Amino acid sequence: MSETTTKVETDREILEEAQANGPAATLGAWVRLSGPGWIQSAITLGGGSLSGAVFLGILGGFNLLWLQLVAIVMGVVMLSAISYVTLSTGKRPFREINSHINPVLGWGWVLATVAANMIFLMPQFALCYGVLNTNMGLVPDDLQSKVIVSIILFLAGGGMVVLNMRPGLPSKIFDVLLKGMIGVIVLCFFGVVIKLSMSDAFSWSAVFQGFIPDLSGWSQPTGQLAEIASQVEEPQRSYWTEKIIEVQRASMIGAAATAVGINMTFMMPYSMLARGWDRPFRGLARFDLCTGMAIPYILVTSCVVIASAAAFHANPGKELLSEDPAEMTESKIYDDWAKLLATRIIKEDQQAFEIPEEYLAASKTESGEINQGKLIANLVAPDTEKTGLKPFVPLQEQIAKLSPQEKTLASSLVKRKESVLADSLKPLLGEFLAKWVFGIGVLGMGFSTIVILMMINGYAFTEMANVKPNGAVHIVGCALAGLSGASWFVVWQGSAQTWLSILVSSFAIMFLPIAYVTFFMMMNSKRILGKDKPTGVSWLIWNLLMIVSVIGAIAAASVALYDKITGAGTPLPLKYTVLTVVVGYLILFIGGFFLRKPFDEKEGSEEVAEAS
Image (tube, rainbow, N blue to C red; front, side, top):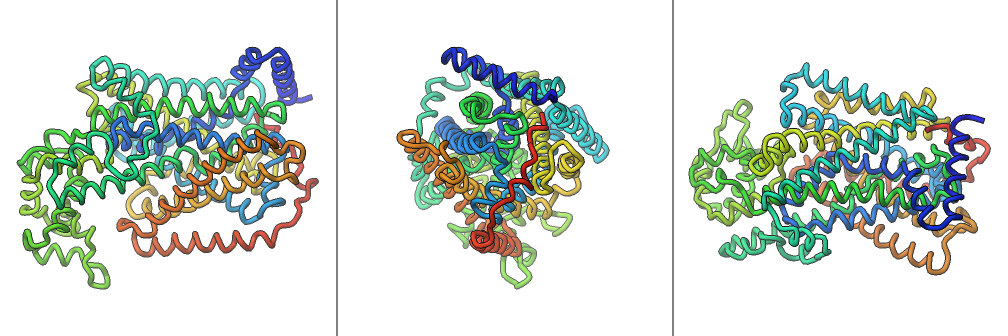
């Protein structure tokens, strides 16, 4: 009997004995045996969650804290459904989907997962380097440093993956290290918030009130922005109100899409099967998701929102409030902020000044039309080396003369990097906390996500090849993902970054609600679950919760795809490419229902449990 099998049997005995001894003993066993939920936590606590939480604090202050809570609850519901189906059948979902639902759906699921892993590892490597370079000042900003840091991250991440692949003590060390990383992340950000509260930077009553769901943000500005907007004269008031509401709606919908990614839906079942979990572990799986994924996610993202709100909400900084154009340009967000105000000025009063011909000529498309976004960029922050243009002084002067209220509203729509947040917190936290504690928390978020995305890619490759995990194919999958991420300083730049991020995120966003619907169907399938299909009150509760989550995912995907296809910032060829990918896949998806055939159980019966 292998070491892995012995451990699985021991875990099962511990769990069954605890369940026989009552709730208290069961809870203790669950805490002791938890694991896959922490893996999910390491994925979701990445750069995307960090940047999203920073912007929520800027936009809504404490009023949008409830968004992260609702989003992760929806994610827990669907991941719990995935775990229930997997542990009830004991079979690999990819094979079950191909056999019972739709092979196009199954292959789309695994390919979307691989694409997301390969591409979205790049910003995680970039995030880690950015922290070491900008926040901590440990490495210089040059190519050699980027190469060295990327190699170290790749080797360290690969070492963690190898630990997870080995049964017994190595996999136990992996669990301890992973939980330790999540714990450090939580403690770092929690420490930042405690220090802020001691500095009277915010009120705890306002924070707790922010966790109460408030849908008014769908139709009106939230936080202090509502009062500030009311002080602006028409027609500018209507312009900024509509702009803020539009962004708030996108944030509310986006929160539902970012808490759980397509690769998380893939990792959950395989991380459980790899541990040998089966039917008796279903309660543990739900507990593990709540304690290992949801609680750390809520704590960390809430702390980031609080810190961001304390630093930036309704607070553009003295540079932007100045009436001196030269002083305004000293702000780190000047370019994006000025573009917003310039857009408003030109839209409301095109006769305010005459735009010189050289700016118009540099802003024309191949068809000879004026690209409005390019024109604004050339007027405010032109690429002097490329165009020979300088910022248009009359427009700068007009921006400088705008009211403090308009300047504040515009600043609330500008996203900040985590390094800008750390710098802004220095007066409140001190040099050490802002530079090191905050920086270590961000570094932990990036590195833990690197480890898990490499792991997921290994499992995805073994599924596509229909071989056991932990072999050569598994290692190749992990290594390819890591190498892709480590190439960020070459690939994750300029137009390539735009194309890759929009294409892959479009496919992943489109696929998330499809995956949710798939597992919703599986949870209601007697053919798949047999006697384990929920009935009565249990069936009603499961379906109510899943329907809410599915609707949220569909709404998020629809709005996100619409924005990518119609957004002014998306190049026209890329819009057509995204539309072609989406429509093409949906056509294949419909055809897949006619192509499915019963899966050969003998062919796909290899045990996945040979992993950690």
